[in-house]
Image: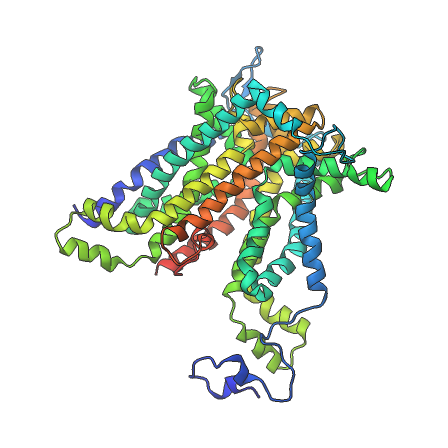
Length: 277
Length: 300
């Protein structure tokens, strides 16, 4: 048996598993999105475009735009918070680097539901902040609450790739920038940022993708006017039991996200090829 | 002019050499804006305040979430005395264990195949393996639910496990593959020169070198599966439901102090698991930290 044949047999279980339990379900989803529900409420396959027409309905279209808007706001905030944090740890972390990095990752391992719930306990109408300050601040059921929940949920995904990029960067490049009389800001803009742009892009995609599809933050922290596409999908698959429409929503979302996924995957695949060469 | 440019071919001089005697320069050339430290402080406050709140109030003797009225473990008693919550905890552990074992096995094999095999399928498989990592969980949850109902597979713990394994395989493959790429092939060739079969070489040479990464990946998968809500939510049966699904139901009914206890308990489980993932590679006599193994950055 050649090495190639030997190693190729190792691909079989994983390949089959991903094919049967990842690709096939996605194809089912695509197929049912052209279907409809019969009089008994059962999902039936078909070749209709009704579900996609419904996406453009004034009831649903704003939800799609809102999801993208919330996710973009989340990415921008994560970048503004995450870059300085990653910068500090990578450059000035010293021997505390590992500890600081662990502290960044730690909250991520608190259950996402619990973390979101903690915000309710803190900023709810009768939560800690209003209790201690004796105020009547309204935080829940606002877009700010939902976006804050998303930022809190996915910030780690932004910090880690930026940290990795900064850690890889050659510090002497900055020295060179200084030698050329660059101000701190110019050096950052023309040297540091371009050298870490891969990390920034990777982080942005890794935050954007789950943020668009999230329904937890909007369900728990938002009200009726903060509904996101994830909430719609969840409702169609559970409460309202209209799977074909839920599938169409999911497919539309995936199609939109596909652009970002392809960009990210191409970069990731290139990087692993580079590491193996 | 700095001496760096005057000696282009020379190895990097220590920082002291480049320092001009009179000029004040930091040890590293990076700028250190003054606001940065304050910013980091605020950041950690922002990340930890809610968690500290949950842990603290899980020991509160009253129902209040506003003032702490005394230490008590009554919410933990409520948690562990409830038979249905105990069943949920058991279900979560079962799911995480089975997911860990199967995903680690399949993911490790896949990693080996992807690094060592050059077939037409492996390029496509390399991409396919990465896709679950960037697919929003709700998409995976909805499509898994659809598949299971289409083939008449009743929703139960098994369906949750199947959904979790599908996602976890990719995590294992990414971690193990990074380790595998860093291992020199010469050792494997040497074993084969000495008459070992391919399988024996894999078992006796490759696998032992991969253990730290496999272990770390397995524990990571355990923590992710134990914590997962969205996939479980879509693929769960009536009962027992895993712990996060129960938390969801409870939160929707309103804020309850028991949630603080459950959350704190899950936090401890996660920290222990991740702590093991970070420490075990070290205990196995490796110099590199578990964090590097997990981030796949060692030897690269």
